[in-house]
Each structure stands twice: as structure tokens, then as C-alpha cells.
Image 1: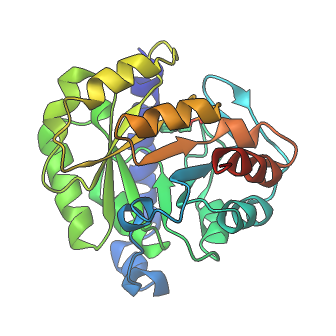
Image 2: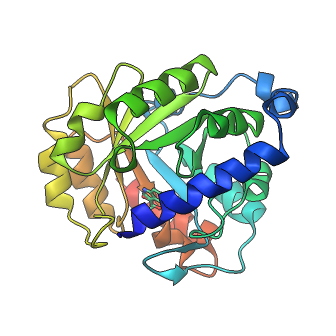
Length: 261
Ligand SMILES: O=P(O)(O)OC[C@@H](O)[C@@H](O)c1c[nH]c2ccccc12
């Protein structure tokens, strides 16, 4: 069993437990449920912003703990202040050390927020909306084309934007009308190997009207420029900043170099 299969197996159990502890009607009664979501898509297309979707990530299956001490408030505050186009907050507890409580703290800032989790059930979409998410992630590697279509359509009904993550050519068929943004994961989740050239080759096969973002393993300003030149509008980056004592500072420094004329 690879790590993704392990995570999905655990997630199914987690979602069933959640369903019996908090009813859908309770989620729908939460104040954020009625809030109008912000558009990450529009923010990525705004030339005044950096294109970076900066991630709050405490740990990962490949690296273990990346950052145990930083506060959501400090880090997200700096990400927003120094020009992130949006932020991503991990809510998976078991494998990434995240939580919905981290997410709620991030929601105090006025920026598009991606709820980063492993979505397999409509319940999680209602929950995402209730906690104030703007965008949700669907991972092609753990969903059928039909499941992507159904979950994406339901997310759109709730007013959420949909980021579809692909890694392999065989997942191109998961792209549908309801997917607002296509993310290419540079990291192979089975081997953890990062390959930017593979992502660029794959990006050429994505319908040109879709917004493309590049995810994972991004560390160099030169790589961002290279990806921009190849049609990418967004860059999802976590570890580069989170591995530092002061992730917000690290982000500010990176942006300074990125925007240097
Ligand atoms: O920390 P990195 O290498 O910059 O990667 C960020 C992000 O792309 C990565 O966390 C990620 C991409 N797809 C995911 C799916 C689930 C959890 C996490 C992820």
C-alpha cells in the first residue's frame, strides 16, 4: 500500500466518525456557511500579486516535522502582508499535523484560503464551507473521474472554487468543466521524487483555457520564473518557508528576490 492509499483508508474512517458527531444541519447553521467565497482564480490572475499560494504545513509524511512552533496568526499574517495570492492551510491531523482550528485562525485574514485535505465525501465540502474555505482540493490520484465530477459540481453549488491536482498523464481525463484551477504536483506521492521537467511536459496537455498552478518542491526564484514562462499562473509552496524559524520572514525575502527588477 502506498502512502496515499493509507491516508485515504484512514480518511474514510475519520469522515464516518465526523458524520456521527456533527450533523450536516449543524454545519449549515455555522455563520461562515453563508459567506460569499473569495476567488483564488481571480487573485492568481491579478498581476499586482506574486502568484504564490503560501502554505501552512507543520509536518508531512515524507519529511516528518517541518515546523512545530510557529503560530498560524504570525505566519499567515506575513504571507498576506508580503503579497501571497492566497494561502493554503493543511487540516489533516494524522499525517500533516493540521487542524480545522488552524484553519479557523487563518480565516481571520482577508485572502483566498485553500482547505488542504483529502476530500472523498460531500460531507467534507459542507464542512469546508462552514469553516470559511474559499477553495477546496480534489486529488485525481485518489478519486475516479466520476467522483471528481460529482464532488466538484457539489463544491460549485456551495460557491467554492475547485483545485484539481494531477500528477500523471492518465489523470488528464479528470479535468472537467467544474475544475477552476488545475494543479500539477511536482512530487510523485509514491516515491516523493520531485520532477519539474515532467510537470512542464504534462502542463502542455492541459486545455489552454484552464488556469495552471505548480505544486511542491519549489525552492528557487529561478524555477518560478521558468514556470511562469511556461504558462503557470500559480505556485504552491510550503516547506521552503515553513522549514525556517520565521516562515513569514522567509516568505518576505523570497518575494523581494522574485519581484526584483
Ligand atoms: O512543501 P512543498 O514541497 O512546497 O509542497 C507544498 C504542497 O504542494 C504540498 O504540501 C501538497 C501538494 N499536494 C498535496 C496534497 C495533500 C497534502 C499536501 C500536498
